[in-house]
Each structure stands twice: as structure tokens, then as C-alpha cells.
Amino acid sequence: MDYNNYNYNISHNELDPHVKMAQTALTLGLISIPLCLFPYVGIPMAGVAILLAILSKGNYQKLLPQAKKSVFYSIVGIVLGYALIAHSFVTVFTNPEARDYLNQTYERMYGISFDDALKELGVPTDY
Image: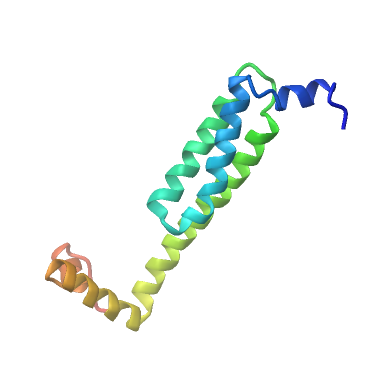
């Protein structure tokens, strides 16, 4: 590795605020992947990581390598988070055992079953 290379020095200059921002974006992007199991945490974190990655570009013509990786990892975190949400909805509305469990849990928490709450909102529940 040639440490006198211009591109290497740009992407590894610890004093440059753009590099620090790109590294922060990379960290947030990586953390968003396991946190996609908690959609209300992982998805916004991935969004912030993408925003920081784009802002880290500054006046450079291209994104720093850390920022490119951050965008990739953040997109993975967002896709996994939304896939988990979609899977949860499909499971609740198609699996009777999961629906019964949700009704019991919802009733313990709120005093009314999930199906009754949906009926109050005008959503048909006769599946």
C-alpha cells in the first residue's frame, strides 16, 4: 500500500471533518443492520447514516469509500427492516395462531382484543 497516494490520504485523514462524518455514517449503517429487528430504531438510524454519508461528500467529486459502504449497509438495514414489518403483518393476518396470540396480548394490554379494535376502526376482520 502506497501511503503517499493522494486518494488514500483523502480517505484516511483523521483530521478532516468529512472523513469523520463518513466514518460515523459507516458506523451507523453497520449498527442499523442488527437493529432492523427493532424497526422503529434501525430504519431511522439507517436513514441518518445515508444522510451523513451524502453530507460527508462536501466539495469532493465522489463519495469517500466509507460513505459508499455506509450507503450500502444502510440500504440493507432499511430493506431488512421493512421486510420484517411486512412479514409481521402477513403473519398476523394469515396465521390464526399468531392472530389469537396477538388478540390475547392486545387484550391484556388494552382491555380490548385486536379484532375488536379493528372493528371499531371500520376494518373488516372476518378472514
